[in-house]
Length: 163
Image (tube, rainbow, N blue to C red; front, top):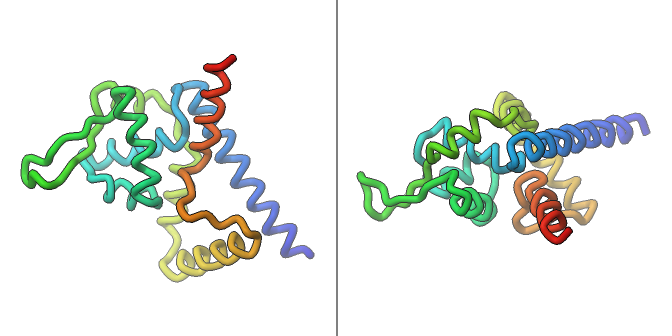
């Protein structure tokens, strides 16, 4: 039973840290933790395709596209054809997006992604396989999970607009 407690306590700590971090981002920057995470990747890289951005955010292209769409609509990210390859669409921060990123607090997603990247390859593979098995055994598996707490932020905004 001690192993079960250790596992659940670790999951609780992770979920709480991500939830608190995401809400802090919403309160101070008006953006979800997922949006700040995407802005960070564009800040670091300069220009990325949607597929490259999905890879850097450890998610599926269709998932990150939803977040990017909101950032484009809010004027924080631009989308343009590559000057080097007209077939390639590139995303980049706008000046407004760069300011939003600079003002935003560091997110738990950023810290978690950094920590995962710091694991050696074997530990990362083992952790990924074990978590995948746990999620499947619990019946929580989804075809394309959202970026962390992005759905929660969207639901809170809808409720605030209706109120």
